[in-house]
Amino acid sequence: MAAPESGDGNNGAARMVTLISSDNTRFEVEAAAASLSQTLQLTILDGGGGGGDGIPLPNVDSATLSKVLEYCIKHAPAAANGGAPNATAVDRAELERFDNEFVNIDQSVLYSLIMAAHNLEIEGLQSLVAKKVADMIKGKSPMEIRRTLGFPDPTPEEQAEMNAHMLEYGWAYE
Amino acid sequence: MEHLQPDDVVAGLLTLLSPRDLAASRCVCRAWRALIDTYRLLRADFLPFSVGGIFFLPVSDIAFPPFFSCPLTGPAICSNLEQFGTGDLSFGQLKDHCNGLLLFSEHVVNPATGKWSRLPLPPPSPQPPGMKHFFFFLKWDEAFLPSMTPHV
Image 1 (cartoon, chains in turn cyan, yellow):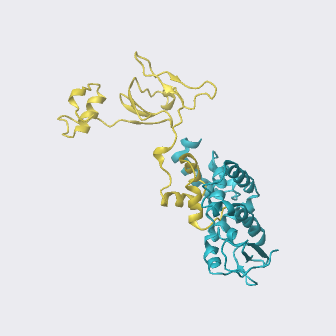
Image 2 (cartoon, each protein chain N blue to C red; image 1 turned 60 degrees about the vertical axis):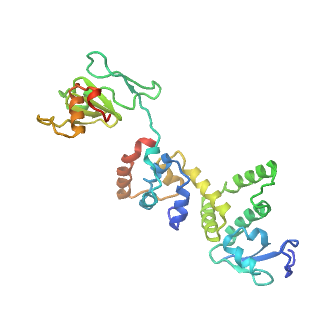
Image 3 (spheres, rainbow over the protein chains, first blue to last red; image 1 turned 180 degrees about the vertical axis):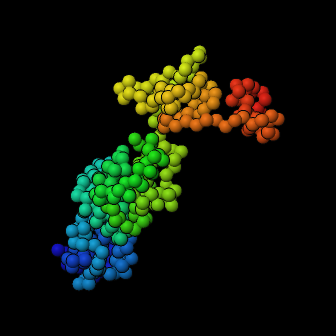
């Protein structure tokens, strides 16, 4: 979209960087959005990712990266305000609504997001996805947790082990 | 999600869980259990108590104490303690209770698990010097005198 600027103005209108997914798709985003990633932040501060270079992300495929960037773009303005002390209640409610919808996704996507958020060190996204998985666990029995999170059915040996451990604190969640 | 790696990702996720959910997660698989134990995430003392019902201590000579529980869910705990025994076993009259255990003249019974065991024989006189033993012995015989046990 916008032509990459090699200017030095940090606050200049949208300095862009290019990220390259593991399957070689190029994503052009505002540096401010990509900088939500602690991993990318230093590279970007050093002027990397501009021009035709692009920053390769060998651990993140294009489907996941586009999802990650969707999050970053939405959250970048609030992050730029330093945790948004002057954000209005409306802004915050809007972000919250976005977050809730954002993690309302297929489990395999959620799994990829957890890994990407971890690799790219995007703090907000990490806690968002972790909270989503925690919510999926809430109130369930060990067997239900396994099914919900897509674990394969336990082998007889695993089942016996589960049963044995369920005796320990079973009263707490039966 | 089974192959979620590395450990700190899973651990970070588990730290968000309540003690109750941690107790359940601890049974999910070996890896999770190892994490929960290694990071000492589960505070068992914070686990919620589930009250199955209330035993009323008998004031007269009733064989076993009356048990009150929610009529909708039905008693989760067997109130007929006689059933725990092997037929002709009788616990006699309830003497005391502590932490969900019931003390009878010769047995200790856990009504939640249905397990019971026979009390050890009282120490022969003269009584051992330890205050704990002293207290235990006196209480068992229902000769408990508060003034004689300054530590309780």
